[in-house]
Length: 104
Image (tube, rainbow, N blue to C red; front, side, top):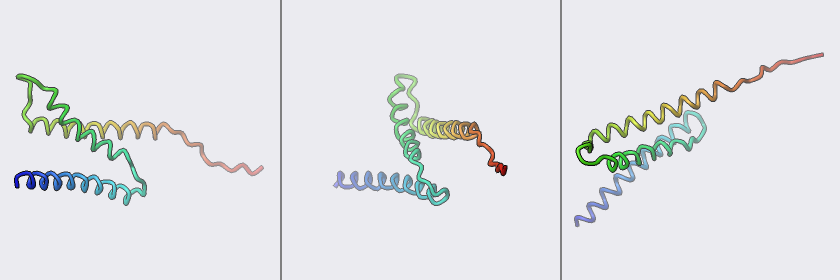
């Protein structure tokens, strides 16, 4: 019975995560008309940074889980902010030629 409850809770948790990811894709597509697959990369940054931070600390430098969670959220937000800035710089660097009509 304990295993059944564990599997049920784990399935509901994973399903909720997938639902939030799908909601992000849906909102992005409805507002821009484009599918941005980088959305999944930011999910993975958030998902993989917490275990890495947890395993990195040892001895007296091990942080409590609440601090690690807040640090993980900050890391993911910083990564997204940096990515957006870099994309904006590349977009601003593009120089478009003006459309002119020469009627000679």
